[in-house]
Length: 115
Image (cartoon, rainbow, N blue to C red; front, side, top):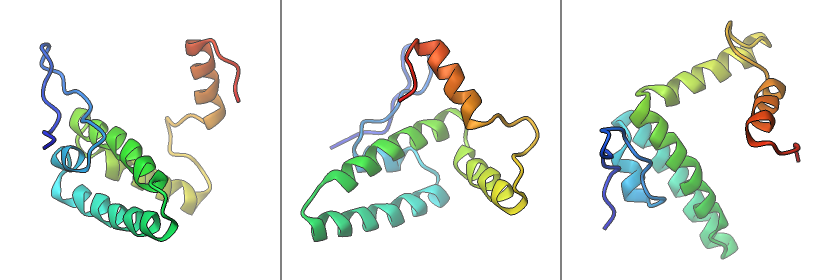
């Protein structure tokens, strides 16, 4: 049985394992509802296609979201609000950076060419 992410020696949260119970244990009830909804969709798709890739992809995605919630509570709904604002206005909120800027920073940091 998986356990939720435990604090490290420096008292910082660590990402949960890519297991549904461990991920869900890191989420607030409101965010867990979203996880459960996506979990059901992924399971249905995996069953229909006889392919576990949707489940594995979901666990990877939600592992990151769960860690973000541990380190910055409320981050999930802030990201959704930012996306909603951007879609409604066609403008990124003040202080946001473009995907190109983020990609450039990652290339600089990692020393890799973009794919």
